[in-house]
Image 1 (cartoon, rainbow, N blue to C red):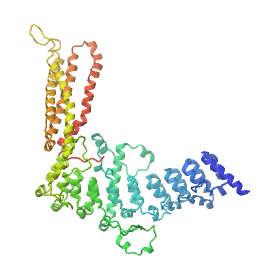
Image 2: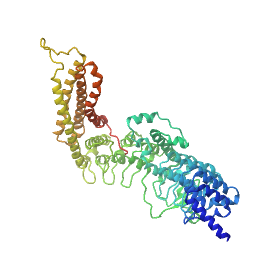
Image 3: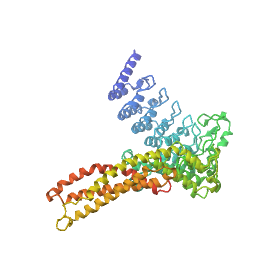
Length: 614
């Protein structure tokens, strides 16, 4: 009879939870706590507290935990796991509710060590989901009860790996302040944190493109260190978030590099059979020599003994991704890293040339560690740095639109590398018996054709506008507002200042529109040879657009000036809206061409191209 009553109470409790009647849930839980706190309510093995944490409001969870905390023997309800091995604290960490996490952790701080079926602790889940505030609070509440295993799951991944993958750089920095030993640990794939960091170019200033205005804001922005206030986190501006990301990622990088020694850096390029996770993982070799049978699954990450391939060094990945900060910091701590090579025989110089990373390449040229022999290095296919710079590749790395401007920067990059390598490499054939110049011509044939088509379309549209302006400007420059005095043959309104403005601007509009028209016609009749994209064609396009913009501005001014002194005083103010509406179409066209114009100026005067990180 009593069991039947208990079953009815449990069914009623489950119904209240499903319908969201949380006040009734708390009341039922408190009245019948002796048997409902351990009752499993669904197929996932979850209790009322599990469901309240997952779906209920924060105040209801706090009330349920308060009921549980009344007697010490009742606190076992906080340790009940569902079929996935998750305690209520695990679920609270995944919901992102700080209040739920705090009330459960304060009731039983030892839950910080609880591990689910995949070996994840509540703090690990907080790091995995990027919940910085929850991780910090749980770490503070549970710090007297935590074991070293809390920061690593069974597969080998640590909370530092999670923070880097989620790009939570403030969390990663705080983790390193608490556990510097994590800087040397690898995950189930054998990847150390430095390796993961090398694949995050957008986390660093060198890998982030900012506009002119954003650059000013960025450099003026002050970033507070280690701020956890959630309200402040929400109210941050975009520029502040970017700068915080760069600040913390650089701090994380420096802490990781300073936490590893030379031997560990050398080992980081391999997939070790065993990796220690104790508090002093200073020697991988010593651990490998230990008896495997004496180690628990928590102490080591095991890898396939047959899988001993060489992992690409972090500095090489950083060079390929253009992370100048990482390359510089690694070379400061480990100068011998400059000699690292990939499985294809490419050193850091070859990778920077192939990946179109001007900042990294310039950094290496200015470094005292770079020797002449490194510039002479050939990969396994006999390619020099100039061969690799000559190859176009699948990606379009330059931060510039338009095939013609892409081609211009390809030429500038090729010439930049050309002047840095020894002279004999200019004609040195690779494994396919091709010189760098031959490789460049073959790889860029399609880009040259696309560049020619792009210039044709651009010049055709601009020449139509230039011709229209020239027609209007010619008619305007030959007209005399107000007529001519019959007695002297001089303009009637020549004493008005507006007349001088009209006469000069109409002539300027005619002159520059005709100049723009001839320049665009010169582009249309060009042969579009490879060398023409270096300076000849961009210069013509730049001058043509400049002339076009000047003629447009002059024509608008002459139009306004021609009507300014013709209209009576009472109509002057009313005519201003008419002027504005009349000038809108041509003004919109000019504004739409400004991005192209600025790109042209940037590509023409910049000696070294700039990579794109989009």
